[in-house]
Length: 50
Image (tube, rainbow, N blue to C red; front, side, top):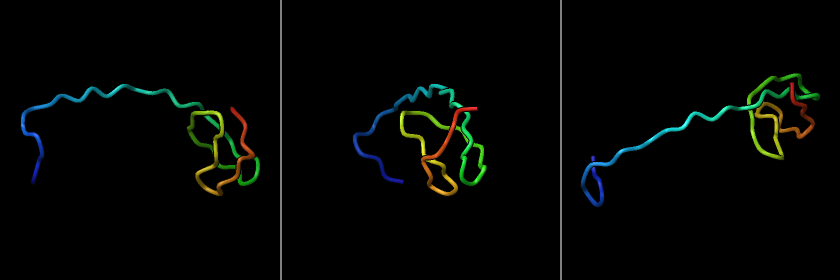
């Protein structure tokens, strides 16, 4: 494995709460965030928070 810059580093990972959505076109339920949520299954923007 190759690394550039050398040295040790620490990564802090924050937990992000995703809101639950349901797609009105295909019925898929999924987690998402943001203003323009798109269904990962059918790529429709016709989704609602549940």
